[in-house]
Figure (cartoon, rainbow, N blue to C red):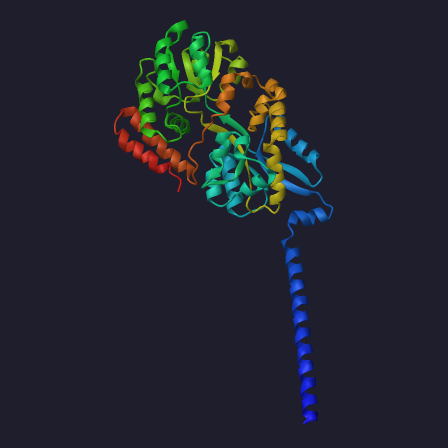
Length: 430
């Protein structure tokens, strides 16, 4: 009996030892698996950095006739040793650039880490899943939306997520004749303390002075410029009926040209520059034409004032985003946060003459001295009040429908309620 008890004890002891050994083996295996997982989750940027090689970032930005973009890239490359940006200068033809980027992104290519986008492409690219959201990056970097141009940020915000930062903004402005408009009215305009109804009254009051023929000019032809102006008159589609009705009132005004419904930017700047209009809505390039005394310009810079539009000016310009398929997402963020931040935007402004999208630079003396427009108080107010066109994954379709409906109403003055409802439906973002 004692013999069997001894045998049983030995067997029990051996079993326990085997269990312990197996347990330790599993622990060792688990530890090995964790180490393998940790190694696998190490980012490609960290691996390349560990190897001692500089990580190359490919950025797709349109060609630049100024030194601004190259100076920006040089400044970034000199700011650190981890990354080296290489610039693929794409065409300045917006439609061709859009198609080139779309082909690359649709294929899932990682050839570009950072892409530059017209403000109206952001919704399309984000909706298609081509862009990396940057909300977490911004939070970790201590950046907030209100540090950047408002309209630019709204243009890159799709379904509540932020996908872009501004490379440089553009915006709609009100130009007015300082030698015609009273100081009191000029102060209201520059402070943004007026409505489209007030503008109508001023246009009616001042037209005819100093040989002017028209009170207020803007873009009403059935093209993208009409979508821009509908955005402004309707306060980003929050007051559609009111805005369209006001546009029709201007269309029918005695101080408006009979062919206002065919006006683009070109007809607008030509008439204002030749002294034919008291007020005109246009982009900053018009000031550049007047300042440079281009052919046909008859008004001088000291006859021109700048003011924000009553509901804010539609934002234009370009944005930077991260390719979802980039193999260097962290590096791409480092570049766009530098380019859109204080240092990068100062380079773009002082070297390229671009409008800064980083708001703090609106008080920077060096930046202010680099662009005369920035010295206009009304322009500074306008920069703080930019608004975005509809952000949609099908922007071209949305814009086309807005143009068709708005032009139909402006031409006839009929079916306001029906057309307003139609525009409201297409501008909703699901």
